[in-house]
Image 1: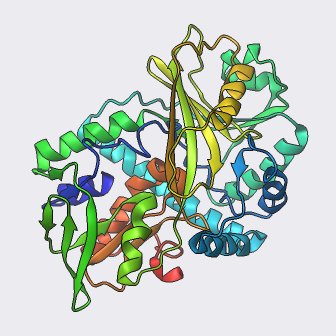
Image 2: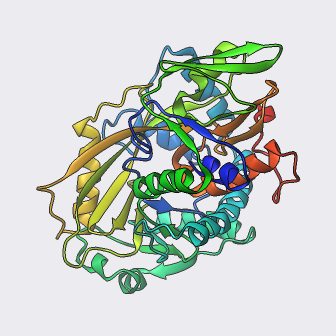
Length: 402
């Protein structure tokens, strides 16, 4: 949707083909609500391997990765392991942080231009840690990111309570925290739907809903049509922005992009009196908690289950437990559950820009940071499509890196 907005605002005629009946009904429907620009450490890092091995034997672990005979999963997994070293993790951090901070500026510009309301809060994100060991490890990453322009504030246990008073009732141990005032939160579902309406009203954008894409028809190294359940669609240029489902249409035309679905879960409950205002990340549990107006959203865990989107209670339980441990006043009687697929690359950064197909451009693979990175990546995409110089370096974001 951000790509549609940026291209539309530059005078291009835009059509969005969507298989659901409305915008933001899948991965963007009930995400964690965070705009975590300073969360730039990739999943593939030196600390990941021992944790993954340990978590393989825990059904309620933050990350569930089990052996699979899927060749695409095996290939992705090997590439992931090759990136689990300090040099590559630091490089991915630089790329993701550069994109994140650029995206922060671009989202502020979109907000100023559109005046959209989506329960946006500029109260930062507070990462809390249950042990000094965990805090020390995260502090090392924070100090590295500070050299790249993203400062986080080290907080004691009492300072965490002062930053977010709702944490005072927590029953779990809190050793300390890291706080970034650069980060934000909001309701992505509301944002995306309102942005779609804005594109229609202001740019004449066309949206074709309930349309399943079956094939990209190629002739002479160019796409000549997108075949859908509602007939063929043609254009001068095409943007692949189908998240986890992107590889399914790219492989038949000879583009093997290493994007694999990482399943995530969330719960949404009514906000209670004294519910948190600052967005929280429980680093140990890998659960994020955001206030979205009269609701509270908690999301987290990662599971490799191919394209299965079923909600498994064994994965919901740790999120409920984490939320209730931090906020004992939370009420779960009117709770909704959600699961979605996040398009994860093995190194972390998304894939943006040109492909070997002359008129096909990539805007996908954003993983768990889709909303965080999309305003910036949409502007990069538009610059590339218009043959303009980009405002930040593209190094590490292009499809050619694979």
